Image (cartoon, rainbow, N blue to C red; front, side, top):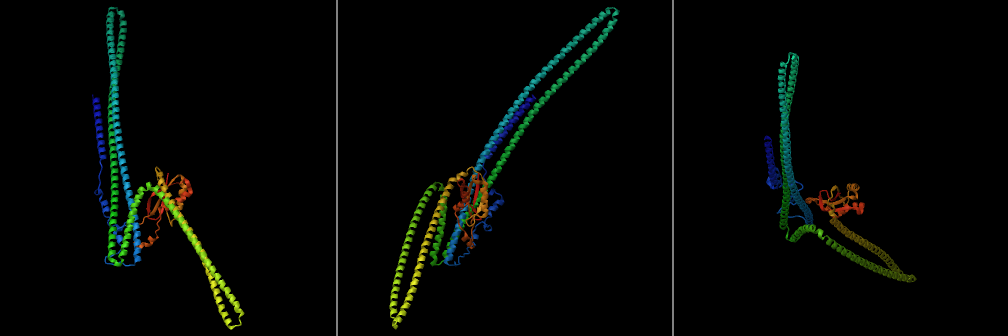
Length: 639
């Protein structure tokens, strides 16, 4: 009876634990489905103060504020602007350059904002996926735990039933043995009593017979007495043996009872141990669920903290951009007011032109920004048509070059004709001079004949002077003709050289355009080759005077030796991260040489192409990275 009560209590306790675990899992799933909302006031006080006390941005070198910008323009409303028109034009050029740099910073902010938004979306998607995986994992774990729990209960019930069956069988066997032993004891007692009665009867009859007999039988009587004594002793011995056997049977019965009690105790211990195992499993499952809940809560907290941090950074950047934009608009309005107040009536037209140029630059930059955005969104679909248009443009340019070459050839023929005409005119002049000289020589001969006459001698001297003058003029004309001939030849040669150089430059220009188009085409068709590949190595090189440094060349050689043509190489352009440059740094502005990303990519890909040829697997990245050091490129190796 006690055994049945123990089994029933254990079963009810196990069912109660299963109900508690299922309720706890339902509550944990409900808690997992809830979404925690955070705001700015949930942050610690130090973090709130860190975001709020960002008004003194001029203390930081990397931020641009109104105070730092106003230091470059010490303009007073009552102060007239000094300087000439050239100085104003120089300042306008400087402002345009600064505006270009501001546009680059604006583009950088847009890229950063877009990267942050993309990262937040990726994190949100990854968080949702992780949440789904965790929920599925928790559900799977709960199902496994529940199945294991029911399996343990079934196993325990089976073991309990088997133990009960074995116990009943052993009890029946022991009962049968006890009954058989009791029957044997009864039979032995009956046999002993019957033998004692028979022996007493024999003794009585024998004594009667002995008394009736003669005294001669006294010895026989003594003998019989001795036999009786011996029989009594043997009977006592047999009785002792029987009592010992009975005691041994009782001891065996006690041992059987003890073994039965021990087995019952073992059964109870087994039930208790399995109950403890069930409780330990339930505790372990509860602890695992708590750990999972804590881990999920910590991940949720970290994710929401990071999300709030990113959102606050994004809001901070957006506020900084809006403040910067408003400050620029205010400064531009102040600049307009100062220009309108300080300039004279005669300079209003120039100021309006400057203002229109400045507005045109801003409009062009905004148009450029929108055009770039539209171009980025529609480049893949319109690239083929653009390539065909570029081919047509190249054909038109080649036709224009041919027309220009024909025009230059015609101009060269015209110059040659003019030169030949000048040479023929010079020859005619020389012939005329030779004729004049011959006439003068004839006159000299005539004068020699009449040398006796004094007047003739004087005329001869005059004519001789005229002849010397004509000879000098003739020599000067010859020299002038030779110099003009040499200059004309040099001019024709120089024109030929200039024409060839111009044709070579145009050819190189259009070949570079075609090369850039091929590079872009290669970029657009090969960006998918990086899917499923892992970046294993990268190098960063800086350019000096549009060429690689020695350090960069050594890195390049090591890269080529290490990975060879089996790897895939990705080239990313690096351009300077121009911060806000003050007006006293005009030398730095004038020394900046802008380069195109295609020239950087071609410079980076030339050593790889020359080394590997057609085996090269190369990808040109769309992204552009900003560096403080200057122009360069980044090469990543994928396998």
